[in-house]
Amino acid sequence: MKKTVQTAFYVLLLFILSRLLLTFAACVYNYITQGYVKTWDLLYQFDALWYVDIAEHGYQSVPNSVTGYANYAFYPFYPMVLRFVKAFLPDRFTTNQIGILVSNLCTLIAGYTAVAAVRIKYPKDEGYLIAFLIFFAPHTIYFSMTYTEAMFLMFTAFFFYFCCQKRFLPAAVAAFFAAFTRIAGVFLVFSLLLYMYEADYGWHFSLSKLAGFVKGIFTSPLRLLELLLCPLGIFGYFYYLYRLVGDVWASAHIQVAWHNSYHGVLRTLFYNLLDSGSGTSSQYWALYAVFGILLFAYLCYKKEFAAAIFGILAVGISLRTDAIATARYIMGNFAVYLALYMLLRNRPLAKNVVMNTCILVTGLMYYMWFAGECYFIF
Amino acid sequence: MKTVGKFLLYIPCLMLIAFYLYVLILGFYPQVSDEYRAYYIDHTISAWPQ
Image (cartoon, chains in turn yellow, red):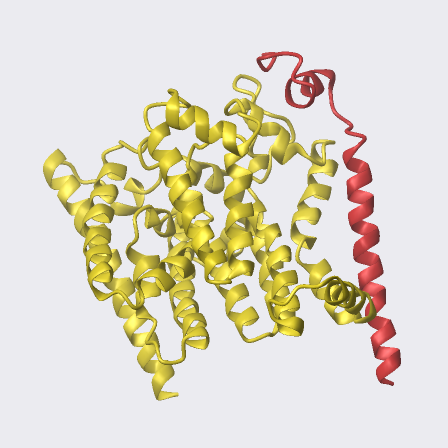
């Protein structure tokens, strides 16, 4: 009990320090521009506007008549929570403020859960580094605003925490909510399969063991239910879209209004690295994607196949069309934090360098976001 | 009793499988306007008709 309270206190302390950095960056921005814009208004840009609109008005029955844009690409659980919380708070709280509140709370819980998860893996570790990375790493600004990243990270952290304990039913429930929050969450079903296999046979593969594992799924209805539960949220949303728009795949089809697709991960990387890609930041995004892929390869090397497969598939689905915002998807993925933690935990010098760099770069990114130079970090 | 409980668990499993199959089948038959189909699904026009 004492250890739990102590852990919660240290995680909370790290969280408060990270939000002080954000507030400090907002103060610097207001000082330089000689203006006074509140921090929550500075954070209210791009996709945050879409989520607030969905929370307040629901989904569009037809796409915008001028742009062809529609809000189906934004998954429903996060705006549902905003709407629910808003019903209990006084009217003076705007939906954006509630979004910021919810996201920050999710980040804090994700940080605590991540520490608990790595302590299961490495019982001798304190594990605070993973919470530090979640609060301070570059591109984690999205965990502070009305974006789904924080909630998604929280559910995936829950998923890995329960899988580390071999408690697959709560893990499946976490995967269900993750997939209801972002499409990438549906890939947790593959991680769940791998965790189940590891629990039964370790990482020893043979045809007879694979056959026994598959047979075990169908002869154990609880295990089958756990696997089937994961994609329920996303299929529920697909059915809702069919009732609303007449198109089950509207959330994917609607993407054409935003940008063209490269139709493949390698093509996306090739054109963004060597050509102009989708804009001035395309090489940065492509390099970030390579960084993410290397981290997932490292997870494979460490035999963390379940986390690696989730990372590869979740990032791969975004890279199939374009590299835009890849950095956000990578840093919103719990597998990345797991990989970084494993990479740094026994390397004190590298850990110090990374931690100091994180603070400097993240402070700069906060400022850039406030200054409207979001294209680089979008 | 344990066996009965085990078999009862197959019921939600079957319901979920049936629901997923139903949604997947619906995916093959979109009920959308000609403009929507041309722009978002078939990509036969390059801009949303205003």
